[in-house]
Structure formats: structure tokens, C-alpha cells
Length: 279
Image (tube, rainbow, N blue to C red; front, side):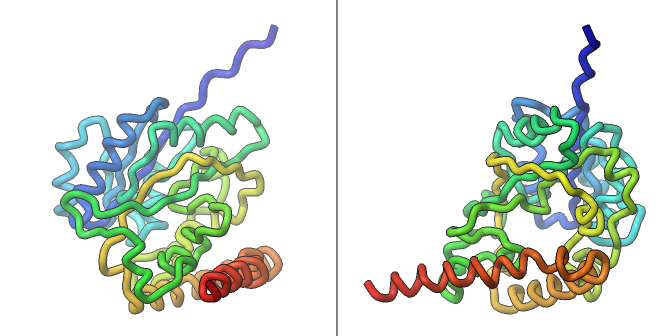
């Protein structure tokens, strides 16, 4: 009888850059402690913020806190986290996200199939978090329909009549894939001058077998992201990133989601609101 393979070890990586999200960061780490399947290690990467690095060192004794030694931005932070992690599977969680108790176990379960290289969970936006200036996205409805209520819908998320797509903010991936693929490009990142939006996308374009989980993580939207100014800025950043990705992988793969959005999502949204207006 063949020996059973040892259970996979899991590293959860969180990237943080500002003390303004401290209550949310604490809630994110607490949600990992409450998981039914707890991570084997949690790595918190502080992105070029010395005061946040010093503040995070003491309250989280069960978390490995490291500073981003690469270029400022999410891609550099994730690369740094990967280099400090030892797990068989890497899982990313936003610093403003609170994971369901079964979130991690549902992400890891598909890896029992050796053909699975990555998994992902969809996101939902929550209301105001205690101690934070976030608010529910329904407030954005004053200037945008539901399909555009969340600036993240630029990337295909938070559209109520579309099956949720796994968010790039909460993916998991076999560590072997990350270690053999090139590092996430620093040109595809946010938080720097002239930012792009698809942080770490150069890695994800190489992953062919991807499973989705219905377990989610809740995120809080800060007030400054519910404005036309932010929405247009995010559109520009995502478009710039898409141009880079399309050059890397070609138009067929690089623009597949955009073709689906124009041919399927927009018509369904139009009919939805046309029916509502006719009532």
C-alpha cells in the first residue's frame, strides 16, 4: 500500500502599507486565527513604512513581520512575502479583508488534485468597519448603477448579475509555481507613480488550472474610493496594465475578459435596468 502524502503546509501572506488601515489589518489577522484550518505560518509584509513596521512587530507575536525589500507597491511586497514563506501553498489576503471561517480550508481542498495549480475566492464588500472610515458600497449608487458601484468592477468584480470571479486579492497558488515563474512585475503594481492595476498579473498569466471557491472574504471600502475621481483613475490604471499584459500574452488571452464583458455583461445590465425603468 503506497504511503500517504504528507498534508500540505500553507503560508498566508498579507501586505500592508498604511497605518490608516490598522483596525482592518488587526481584523484580518484575527480572522486567520479563527479559521477551521489555520495557516501554518502568516507573513505580514510592510511596504516601505517604518512606523507601521515598528508598530506591527509587537501586537502580532504569531505573525512573521517583514519589510518589503523590493520596489514599493503590491507586486514588490508579494514577491518579498513569497521569498520569506516556506509553505507548499501560498495564500494572499488583503489587509482590509476578513475571511470566512472556512475560507482557507475551501481554498486548500482542491490541491488534493495534482493538476490544480491555484485557487481563488470571490470578494464581497462589507459596511463601515469599527474604527475605520469605510462604508457600504450602496452609497455609490448615487452616481453609478450596481454594475459600476464598486471601482473594483473595472476588474470584473462586484457585479450582481454575474457569477463571482475569484478576486486577485485573495488567490492561492502552489509554491512551486511561484518559485519557477518569474517574479511579479513591478510595472504592474499600485502605490507608485503612474501605477498599473493588475498587481502580480505576470505570475497569474502562467497559471492554467484554476479552481474557484464560494467561500469569501469581506472587504471594507474607504470613502475616498467611492468617488468619480478614484473610479476614473482606477480605470486608467487598469487599462494601462491591460496594455502591458496584452503585449505579454497576446490579444486573444489578454482581452478575453473584456470581450466577455462587452458581449455578455453590458447587455445583461442594460436589459436589467431597462426592465426596471419600464415598471
